[in-house]
Length: 497
Ligand SMILES: C[S@@+](CC[C@H](N)C(=O)[O-])C[C@H]1O[C@@H](n2cnc3c(N)ncnc32)[C@H](O)[C@@H]1O
Image 1 (cartoon, rainbow, N blue to C red):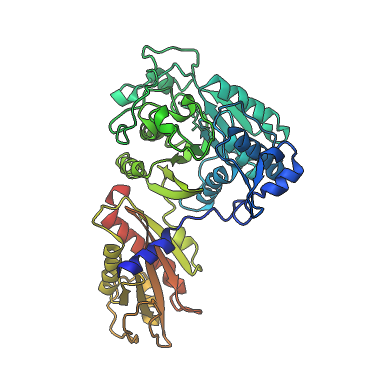
Image 2 (tube, protein in one colour):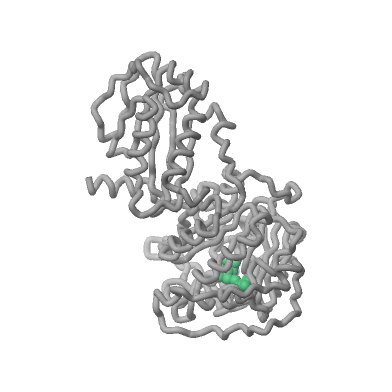
C-alpha cells in the first residue's frame, strides 16, 4: 500500500516544464548557439563525450546565454550590468505560461475591462525586465513593471527601448524607495491610499530600515513584517485595471542566505534578493494590498521560493476572504519554486453547466484542514451519491468512486429532482479492483468516475469523467458535478465562500 501510494504521488505531483514552453521539447542547444554567436562561443566547453555545457558558476556565461536565447528565440535585444540578477529564460517562461493558463481558465470570468488586451503588473521587474519582455513578445500582453532601484529602472527602460516592436506595450514605473507603508503595525499610508494619487516625491515620517545582514536562520522570518517601500497600494492608480499581477520577490532575509547555492551564479544584488522578513513578509504585504485593490485585478500572483511559506500564505489568503487560491510548482533545474494565485472576484460557479457536453470536468478544493485528505473527500463523494440513491464503488487504490446512474436517474436529475431514491438499479457491482477498471454496466445505465488527486497539502483536485460513449449521463453530468462541487465545498472549504 505504501509503495503504491508513493507511485501515485509521483504520477500526480511530478512537475514538468510547461508544455507551451518553447524549451519543453527542445532545450537550448549550446553548440548551435555557439556556432551562431561568436560572443557565446568562448563560454561553451565540451565534455569528453562531446557534450556541450557552460559553467553555471560563471556570471558572464549565464548572462551571455540569456542574451543569446532572448535574441535567437524571442528576437529580443537585452543586457544587464555586472552583478544584477540574471534570469534563466526557460524558467521564467514557465511563470508566463502558467498565467496564460489561469487567464484562459474560466475560474474567474473576465469581467475586468482592460481594453481587449491582457494587461499585467510585474512587481519588481528588475534591471532584466524579463517578465514584461517575455509576456509582450510571446503573447502580446501589455505591462507595467515596477521597481525601486535606480539601476533597475535605468536598465529596464534600456531593455524596453532597445526593442521598439514591443516598447509601446511596457511602462516602467518607479516606486519611491524611501516612502514606506508601515501597514504591519496597523498604520496605512492613508494619503496615497485615499487620494489614489501617487506622490513619488513625498517623504514619510517612517524611514526605511537598513537591510539587516542576519545570520542564517531558516525560521527567522516568522512574525516579521515588511517595512519597505510600497508594493501595490500607492503604486497602482485608482483608475487602473489589470488582468494579473506577478512577482518574483526578494526571497531572502539576508545576503548570507541568498548566497546559498554555489553551483550557479545568476548574480543578484542585496536590493534584488533581500528584504526584511524575506519573501513571506513581502508576499504578506502583497496579500494585504490585494484586499484593497481586489476589484482592480482579476488575479494576484506571486512566485514563492520556499515551500514552507506556501501553507502559511494560503491560510492567510483564506483569512482575508479570497474566493479562490491556485498553486503550481515550477521546475527550475534541480530546485523548485512555487506559484501562488488568488482572486477576490466571484467564481464562475456555473462554468460546469455552461459546458454541458464536456466529458471531463474538474474543480479544486483548497484550504482543507490537515485531517481532510483525499480519502476523506472520496468517502464523502461516495456517501453523497449513495444518499441520493445512486450506486457507487469506492476504489481505494485508484482513489476513484464510480457512480452508476440509470436513464430514470438521469431524467430525475435533469428535472432537478435530486435527491433521488432509486428503486431499480440495473448495475451489478464488481469487485473492487486495484487497477481502477470500470464497473459492469447494463445497457440502460451509465458510469461517471470521480477521481481525487492531492496537489499539495491542503489542496485537492476533484475530476469527473464520463466512462462510456453515448453516455446517458452526458446531459445531466454538468449539473451533477456542480451539485457535488457545492456539497464538497460547503463541507470542506467553508472559509472559501
Ligand atoms: C528577485 S528580483 C526579481 C527581478 C526580476 N523580476 C526577475 O524575475 O529576475 C526582485 C526585484 O524586486 C525589486 N523590489 C524590491 N522591493 C520592491 C518594491 N517595494 N516594489 C517594486 N519592486 C521592488 C528589487 O529591486 C528587485 O529588482
